[in-house]
Image: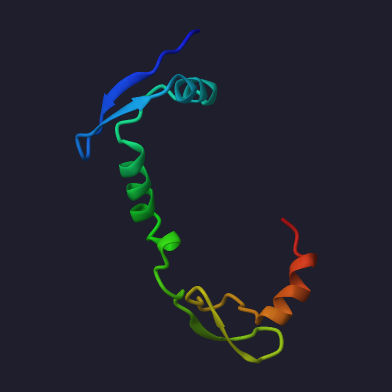
Length: 102
């Protein structure tokens, strides 16, 4: 199939952008059936907002205090520990991790 650049109006900002032949080929190769609705700038902005602006320097990750289930040392983890689930300090986790099976 031969593709030609196609003009599209952005559903967010109203700007016109081109859905290039190369992009159309890429979409087809991935099995995507819908055309983009947003211009590249609005797509990037939406992507950043959806992922919590992590790429925009949203600040440090929230850490939670915990006690290592292996050595008993106080540590901090990036998730809220649950009752009955062991939490490990980074040193003990690195020792246990290779032996864990998936």
